[in-house]
Image 1: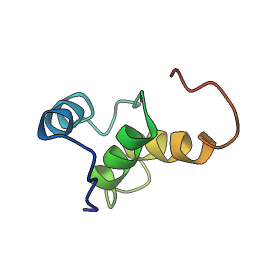
Image 2: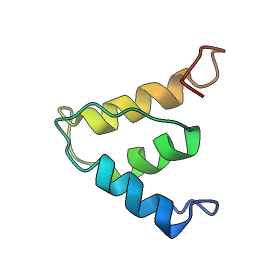
Image 3: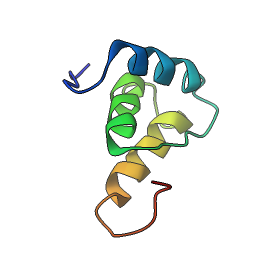
Image 4: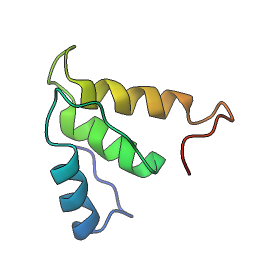
Length: 69
């Protein structure tokens, strides 16, 4: 898993808890959170909605769209 130098241990534990189920679609508050969950769920396969949601958020983060921030 890639390291995220700005992520605190508390943030990492909270994100892991809320994004633990692959069959739930993820909702993200920051690019850092999406990147972290993307790394955590990498390798879970094409049905992992957490991974797919994180990838979509990351890919859409540079398009000027409102991502809930």
